[in-house]
Length: 247
Length: 372
Image (tube, rainbow over all chains, first blue to last red):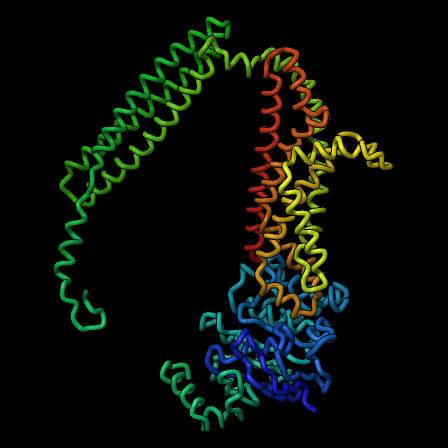
């Protein structure tokens, strides 16, 4: 059984349909990259999975258990599904360490000592142990995003959603963030990435989904989607990226 | 119009000529001359006033040193200003004569700035001179009424003691307001259908007590509650009633400040907190309110100062605060100098607070920018 089953979901903003009848199954340890033009519904799809956005129709299941509809414990759901945002969204009034400790101590009930040990381990792993007591505003975008990833990892998520996590970064900082994602992929973390980094998607993804007008227009292994795209729209999208020198 | 997408932009030569023609230096001679003239007027006005007012003060028994010192300072200031105006004029003249464009421009700029500076000092000196005259005209009626030093000295202790009541009211209601208004603000921002009744109540409370003038609230509570014969709340001291009334009034204002702070926290921060599994309440407690409070320290402090001043309103229900005490003294002596003491006290406690608030929020900003 798939870890995540997205079953024919729709999402409206007023009369505008952002997601129209999209279905997607994600197996454990799978890395899925969502690509496609702006406004195609990549971010909305991710935000529907942890229910930051409510879907209008269809259903989403985790390990076969429906998580859409009334009466679902959203706090429990979000404990197990991590998300990292484009804008990092670190809490500016807390140090790096406090940012990573907040949820484990206040939600999971870990002791401060235990959580600190774990956080320092992670921070050391991403090369930011020396920034543990710094405030987010003093960090570069790349450093902030790495901390945001650690903050999500502190909850031991079974699924990690990465919403264009390098789109706000200066080009030279992109790789330091992607290196971590690469390590996570190698470690077997189940992930869905919305991304514009085609080279990275090609390298790290098990499956590429090209989204177009709120639905999956074409999907398949990276070699196939990038090397021999079938759909007209996919071809147009990829060739416009080539012209802009992004592929 | 030139087409920026075409290959040729034809009028470049003409544009260059217009540009160069527009960059001749300005000497600001007119402004500098006007400033010098105004400087002379100011000097004369200050000198004559210092002479007259000083002589009058000495004739009224003020010690010669105290009487003449302010005048001498003012005259010296006028001289300095006059020199500033002269220097500006010299710069302007030099700018007009200079043949080299860049040097002339720099001289013109310093003439302009110098003239503005001198002119603003001249304005300030003239206003202060007018104020000094206001104090001494009509046989110093203003000074005698408001600044009777002997009466101020004799009544100061009494007034100061009564000011303690204001301080107590201020501190107790200040703490209560900070707690109470946070509760109201949180009620006001409760989400969804379930939060509706409390949200509505919070809005009604805010509308009611922001609409009511504080003095009427104090009057109604201070004289109304004792008439109800209810246990406990009909038998409180007038200071307690003042605290209750001020808490209700300022709670309404302050809850709006809190709410503005809560709503100023970007929704992405809330999304981040909720995505980590924090409940609505925990998100408020650990993320939203701490950030909100940082954003609202200046308006909160403003309310604080306003509250402090409004403690004087309790005089209306007979609480013997500093204002009421000084009113009694004023009525007995037919002179308002004791009230001046109160005014000075209020100002003296307010100013350090404003500076402290600035310091606190600056320090917090520094801290959040700091590396580890």
